[in-house]
Length: 312
Length: 248
Image 1 (cartoon, rainbow over the protein chains, first blue to last red):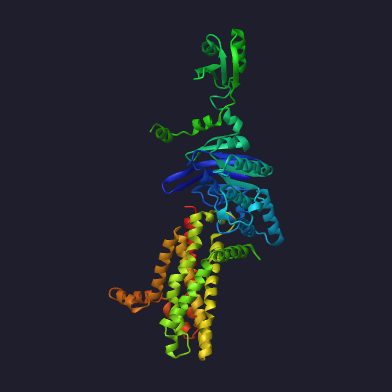
Image 2: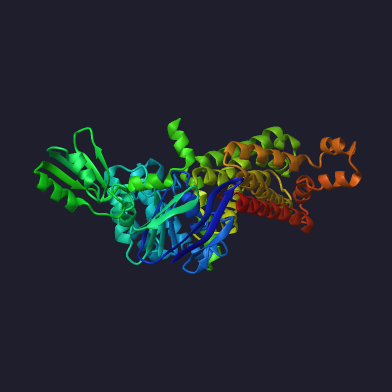
């Protein structure tokens, strides 16, 4: 449904997006991840037909977006990062305007607006002026706008940014409900969000794709994946663990727990348990790590610049 | 109705409502009418002149529009760019041309409404004497076209910046140029060094000769074409600016 090939976008001399390619099929919730300034928003804007690419192309449902934005945009619902809204309008008037632009009139327009209000839980504020709304309602008004015409493709640029945890949950549930037959592409730098709702994650850094996989597979790339944390008393635990063939590294934490990291691709939980039984350690707690997305994220997105920044 | 026309209409309706949903429309109309009345009756010595014609009314319009129309037009794109709603507008299958036509129509119609509310002035003239109604009608036609040209220029400067104040000032300067281009102070300044064709060329940009013929009751196709071409040129320039600036 979305196909990007060699997307490049320059702003003056700065290259914001540097040859991004990907393809997304129906039913996918794609998380577009990256540090701030990695080119997430620029890429989404090119998919939405707001920015023409410097080179490369995007096709949405087979339509080249830069060549025919009007036709391509009919199948797209887009929620920009800044959630722009006409502040002087009421929520209902705003949605009515966009429904009209989307080509609906009369009773059809009203029912579309009502449905969008309902889906985004905006009924209580439908006649309120947008500039008086709280951040959460503004976000949902912008989302409602993107749903008016039941688009096959939803582009959501940081849909939960600035929301409180309850509101985040509401928006995430909505996104999950909406996926189904659609493509949802959402950008975020919140990793828990990707774990919670995405079926696929693309990580970009400095304008390039650096990883493209399912969230679970990405987590498996973490050094902590299958690491075993052991709280136990006994003699020579660390030494014994280090002697197990699959174990790469052993660390002792401040609270006395010992962490054994496996060598790449090995599973060591069984061996650790066997060692504990054999040596009669008193085990208070044992945990197997399923990897941390933020480790992977850091591992693959930290560039020289950010390293320098952190040192300074 | 085809899609392009419905887009233009939807945008125009939204802009129109934006004027009336805020105090802008009411403040503007009241000030416009007060100033038009003040200039006509006090400065223009309408009663003292003893003539039932409206030259003392129309002659002030270019100056009124120069200050007031930019205030109506400055919001059109600058606000859209500042608040980011332009990103919304241009990702819902609306083209820049459709959007700018819609905005132009709304702002121009708003000015025409304000102009129509000055009907009390010709009514007074008709009550006191018998003005040449043909000249009144063609004067209104000229003033309406003049307003359209100013709106188009104001919309152009509004597209240039996300700052409404800058847009306002630029529009006033363009308006001032279009008024003064044909006046001796400007032509004299030019004729000292510029060749005659350039002086004539600059002078021919001026609103004034075209507006004056219409005020006298002469509807000349060339004057109508002049105003139409100013509007088309400004709208075209706006479109070029929008296409180049969007998203940057």
